[in-house]
Length: 492
Image (cartoon, rainbow, N blue to C red):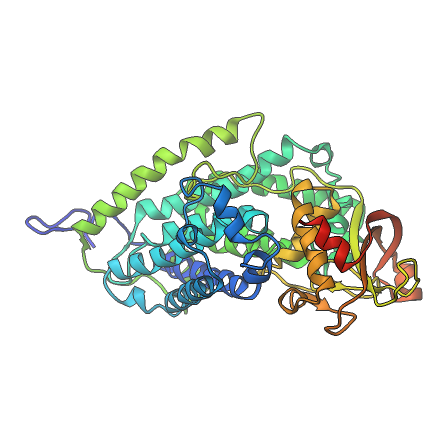
């Protein structure tokens, strides 16, 4: 495509990023794949958590929160049937984007497809309350919104959209770096990784081994993290091949985080977004079988106008996150508008030094002071000390994450946890499906209780001797033994 538009033609050809076909390929299909995962999670978890009979029912939420504060197609009318229908529609549309069907048509087709997926997921997030109150929900929404304007394979990817993706990656990385430097002192003295792998929300099978790395290596990891998050993001806006190098550094460091913990789709999505800085020529030099730069038709004038209008909107909305990056009281994972666009991102501004876990147990004994208690096991969070944590990311276990915040003493978790205990006493099948193991195999326990334990990783010697990945001791009682009758009266 030439440097200027053809006279008398409604097409413009000065607007496309001719060196970004591979970037668009990865961005559109990768972001769509994360949407597929998000809709699968909604189909499997939304109803027991937030449905008509969920732990935090959406009907009760929309009755007290105006639609203007939480725009959602579920605000006007909610039913579990409607939620399932919308989630399946979003899943189907996202799947077509993964295989590239809309991208093979005119530019308006992927624009429409991403708009549908974005609108449906926005509707879910805006009524999702604490179970959807994570920064990566907004990150996925913003990424899907931008991906809608990348066009189809027939035209070059608009250069302004490519740079908006880089601005998004910059905010994710630089925001995380600044929140660390302004937060916990352990980031400044390079000691945070002495604790992080042991106390992070949901360890995986590699976390125990990462925790036991030599302390000097932990300090080197933190120092490298500061360089990656505070220096490298600026290189995303430098001409090639430097921008591709910056993207590669971000991808490698995010992959390191994937190996050491479970953070839903945060790391995977950040790696995908970093591809916005990868040039076709640079990728071809490494992978000769890559997508490569394709021939393009001139960009339709109407599409250029739409993209420029969106770009102008995002520039205006970016004032708030840009100001936040410079603010000494920087907000972490904040949305500045109800559409979850141009948000503020960042994680782990502070690191917990000790790990507490809430252990939920039940008994069929008529005596609440019995010793015959049996533990409910969760899928992702630590439970029995001999069970190695496993990899769940990029899938998101929302109940397990809620249990981590509950153990931190977060008051916002207490309401749903009380209802959760009631559902266990009722042996509610949808709720039990969120767990790894129900010790009563579908029978109703007579009592349930919740105790707090202090967890730490076993040492190498303890692991060899006991085959236990964790060592735990009881530190208190969160909920004393409760029967079905007492729980129902408590929630009246």
